[in-house]
Image (cartoon, rainbow, N blue to C red; front, side, top):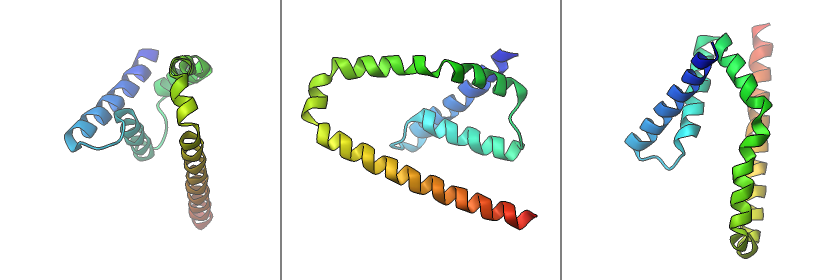
Length: 117
C-alpha cells in the first residue's frame, strides 16, 4: 500500500524532470513535479490514501533529509565566509517574496470560499 504512494511521488518527479529537460527550463525537475502533483490533486479532489500514508511517514523523518545539506555547508564553509552577504540578502528577499505570495494566495482562497457560501 505504501509502495503506491512512493510510486505516485516518483512518477510526478520523473514527469517534472522530463518536462524540464524538454523545455530546457531553469527550474529543478522535482519542483516542477511537485507543481504537477499539486494540480493533479486539485483536479482529483482529494489525496489518495496511499499517498497520504506514505507522505506522513516521510514527513515524520523530514529532519533526516537536512543532514546532507548541513554536511555540504560544513564542507564548503569557505564559500559561506566569502559570500555571506549575498546569501543573507538572497534568503531575506526570497523569504519576503514567499510571504507575499502565500498571503496573496490565502486572501484569494478566502474570498473564493466566501463566494461559495
